[in-house]
Image 1 (cartoon, rainbow, N blue to C red):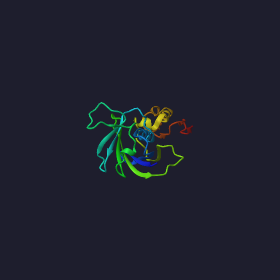
Image 2 (cartoon, rainbow, N blue to C red; image 1 turned 90 degrees about the vertical axis):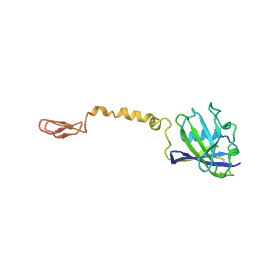
Image 3 (cartoon, rainbow, N blue to C red; image 1 turned 120 degrees about the vertical axis):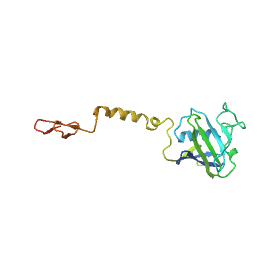
Image 4 (cartoon, one colour; image 1 turned 180 degrees about the vertical axis):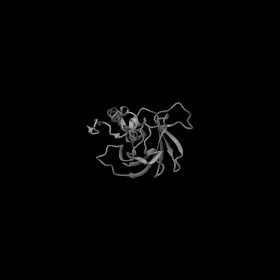
Length: 187
Protein backbone atom coordinates (compact mmCIF):
# COMPACT_ATOMS: atom_id res chain seq x y z
CA UNK A 1 0.00 0.00 0.00
CA UNK A 2 1.38 3.42 -0.94
CA UNK A 3 1.92 6.00 1.77
CA UNK A 4 1.77 9.57 0.52
CA UNK A 5 3.49 12.44 2.30
CA UNK A 6 2.05 15.88 1.69
CA UNK A 7 3.60 19.15 2.81
CA UNK A 8 0.83 21.58 3.74
CA UNK A 9 2.02 25.20 3.67
CA UNK A 10 0.16 28.12 5.16
CA UNK A 11 -0.32 30.28 2.06
CA UNK A 12 0.79 33.54 3.70
CA UNK A 13 4.02 32.12 5.17
CA UNK A 14 5.72 29.14 3.55
CA UNK A 15 7.99 28.68 6.59
CA UNK A 16 4.86 27.48 8.43
CA UNK A 17 3.94 23.97 7.30
CA UNK A 18 2.82 20.53 8.41
CA UNK A 19 3.80 17.24 6.81
CA UNK A 20 0.89 14.80 6.65
CA UNK A 21 1.31 11.10 5.86
CA UNK A 22 -1.74 9.27 4.55
CA UNK A 23 -2.58 6.05 2.67
CA UNK A 24 -3.42 6.47 -1.02
CA UNK A 25 -6.68 4.59 -0.37
CA UNK A 26 -7.89 7.08 2.23
CA UNK A 27 -10.28 9.87 1.32
CA UNK A 28 -9.87 13.62 1.04
CA UNK A 29 -12.10 13.89 4.13
CA UNK A 30 -9.28 12.18 6.08
CA UNK A 31 -6.72 14.63 4.68
CA UNK A 32 -9.05 17.54 5.53
CA UNK A 33 -9.32 16.33 9.15
CA UNK A 34 -5.53 15.83 9.43
CA UNK A 35 -4.80 19.35 8.15
CA UNK A 36 -7.23 20.90 10.62
CA UNK A 37 -5.75 18.89 13.47
CA UNK A 38 -2.19 19.80 12.43
CA UNK A 39 -2.97 23.53 12.45
CA UNK A 40 -5.23 23.27 15.54
CA UNK A 41 -8.35 24.48 13.74
CA UNK A 42 -11.85 23.34 14.64
CA UNK A 43 -14.03 21.44 12.20
CA UNK A 44 -17.02 23.84 12.04
CA UNK A 45 -16.69 25.50 8.63
CA UNK A 46 -16.99 24.80 4.93
CA UNK A 47 -13.94 23.49 3.09
CA UNK A 48 -12.77 22.45 -0.34
CA UNK A 49 -9.70 21.18 -2.16
CA UNK A 50 -8.79 22.18 -5.70
CA UNK A 51 -6.61 20.02 -7.90
CA UNK A 52 -3.72 22.27 -8.91
CA UNK A 53 -0.71 22.50 -11.20
CA UNK A 54 2.86 23.77 -10.77
CA UNK A 55 1.61 27.37 -10.89
CA UNK A 56 -1.00 26.86 -8.15
CA UNK A 57 -3.92 27.39 -10.52
CA UNK A 58 -7.23 26.00 -9.25
CA UNK A 59 -8.65 23.05 -11.15
CA UNK A 60 -11.28 20.42 -10.33
CA UNK A 61 -12.92 20.97 -6.95
CA UNK A 62 -13.11 18.27 -4.28
CA UNK A 63 -15.54 19.65 -1.75
CA UNK A 64 -16.74 18.71 1.73
CA UNK A 65 -20.28 18.95 0.37
CA UNK A 66 -22.01 20.53 -2.60
CA UNK A 67 -22.43 24.19 -1.70
CA UNK A 68 -24.98 26.67 -3.00
CA UNK A 69 -22.77 28.27 -5.64
CA UNK A 70 -22.08 27.93 -9.36
CA UNK A 71 -19.66 25.24 -10.45
CA UNK A 72 -18.07 24.80 -13.87
CA UNK A 73 -18.27 21.06 -13.21
CA UNK A 74 -19.97 19.36 -10.25
CA UNK A 75 -17.47 18.95 -7.40
CA UNK A 76 -16.17 15.61 -6.27
CA UNK A 77 -17.03 14.95 -2.63
CA UNK A 78 -14.25 14.51 -0.05
CA UNK A 79 -15.96 11.56 1.64
CA UNK A 80 -16.21 9.64 -1.68
CA UNK A 81 -12.92 10.56 -3.38
CA UNK A 82 -9.75 8.63 -2.59
CA UNK A 83 -6.53 10.57 -2.63
CA UNK A 84 -4.82 8.10 -4.95
CA UNK A 85 -7.49 8.64 -7.60
CA UNK A 86 -6.54 12.32 -7.90
CA UNK A 87 -2.76 11.94 -8.09
CA UNK A 88 -1.80 12.80 -11.68
CA UNK A 89 1.80 13.87 -11.14
CA UNK A 90 4.70 12.77 -8.86
CA UNK A 91 4.65 16.31 -7.42
CA UNK A 92 0.86 16.65 -7.38
CA UNK A 93 -0.45 19.84 -5.81
CA UNK A 94 -3.76 20.81 -4.29
CA UNK A 95 -5.07 24.04 -2.84
CA UNK A 96 -7.05 23.62 0.36
CA UNK A 97 -9.46 26.37 1.38
CA UNK A 98 -11.14 26.39 4.78
CA UNK A 99 -13.79 28.71 6.27
CA UNK A 100 -14.97 30.67 3.25
CA UNK A 101 -15.58 33.79 5.39
CA UNK A 102 -11.98 33.93 6.65
CA UNK A 103 -10.55 32.32 3.48
CA UNK A 104 -7.83 30.25 5.16
CA UNK A 105 -5.79 28.91 2.25
CA UNK A 106 -3.16 26.18 2.38
CA UNK A 107 -0.92 24.88 -0.40
CA UNK A 108 -0.70 21.07 -0.39
CA UNK A 109 2.15 19.41 -2.25
CA UNK A 110 3.01 15.72 -2.60
CA UNK A 111 6.65 15.43 -1.47
CA UNK A 112 7.15 11.66 -1.05
CA UNK A 113 5.62 8.30 -1.91
CA UNK A 114 6.63 5.28 0.13
CA UNK A 115 5.64 1.64 -0.30
CA UNK A 116 6.26 0.77 3.33
CA UNK A 117 3.73 1.47 6.01
CA UNK A 118 4.95 2.20 9.53
CA UNK A 119 3.00 -0.13 11.87
CA UNK A 120 3.37 2.38 14.73
CA UNK A 121 1.59 5.19 12.83
CA UNK A 122 -2.17 5.62 12.67
CA UNK A 123 -2.89 7.12 9.26
CA UNK A 124 -3.44 9.94 8.49
CA UNK A 125 -0.90 11.53 10.79
CA UNK A 126 1.04 14.77 11.08
CA UNK A 127 4.67 13.67 10.87
CA UNK A 128 6.31 17.11 11.10
CA UNK A 129 5.33 20.61 12.24
CA UNK A 130 7.34 23.71 11.41
CA UNK A 131 6.54 27.22 12.56
CA UNK A 132 3.70 28.58 14.63
CA UNK A 133 0.47 28.16 12.73
CA UNK A 134 -2.06 30.93 12.33
CA UNK A 135 -4.63 31.42 15.07
CA UNK A 136 -8.05 30.53 13.73
CA UNK A 137 -9.97 33.08 15.79
CA UNK A 138 -7.33 35.75 16.55
CA UNK A 139 -4.91 36.17 19.44
CA UNK A 140 -7.22 34.83 22.12
CA UNK A 141 -7.07 31.41 20.50
CA UNK A 142 -3.29 31.60 20.35
CA UNK A 143 -2.74 32.72 23.93
CA UNK A 144 -5.67 30.85 25.44
CA UNK A 145 -7.07 31.35 28.91
CA UNK A 146 -3.62 31.89 30.48
CA UNK A 147 -3.36 35.36 28.95
CA UNK A 148 -6.56 36.55 30.65
CA UNK A 149 -5.21 35.28 34.00
CA UNK A 150 -1.94 37.21 33.54
CA UNK A 151 -3.88 40.34 32.62
CA UNK A 152 -5.93 40.14 35.82
CA UNK A 153 -2.95 39.25 38.03
CA UNK A 154 -0.90 42.23 36.89
CA UNK A 155 -3.46 44.99 36.63
CA UNK A 156 -1.37 47.92 35.49
CA UNK A 157 -4.17 50.48 35.60
CA UNK A 158 -3.54 51.19 39.30
CA UNK A 159 0.06 52.38 38.81
CA UNK A 160 -1.07 55.84 37.76
CA UNK A 161 0.66 57.97 35.17
CA UNK A 162 4.35 57.83 34.32
CA UNK A 163 6.95 55.40 35.53
CA UNK A 164 7.67 56.60 39.04
CA UNK A 165 6.75 58.94 41.84
CA UNK A 166 8.58 62.12 42.98
CA UNK A 167 8.66 63.26 46.59
CA UNK A 168 8.12 66.88 47.77
CA UNK A 169 11.69 67.91 46.84
CA UNK A 170 11.40 66.48 43.31
CA UNK A 171 13.56 63.38 44.06
CA UNK A 172 12.62 60.11 42.39
CA UNK A 173 11.15 57.55 44.73
CA UNK A 174 10.56 53.95 43.70
CA UNK A 175 7.01 52.67 43.92
CA UNK A 176 6.33 50.91 47.21
CA UNK A 177 8.78 53.07 49.21
CA UNK A 178 7.90 55.99 51.44
CA UNK A 179 10.17 58.83 52.57
CA UNK A 180 10.36 59.84 56.24
CA UNK A 181 10.98 63.34 57.57
CA UNK A 182 14.77 62.78 57.65
CA UNK A 183 14.90 61.74 54.01
CA UNK A 184 15.48 58.05 54.88
CA UNK A 185 13.53 55.46 53.00
CA UNK A 186 11.14 53.14 54.74
CA UNK A 187 10.24 49.91 53.02
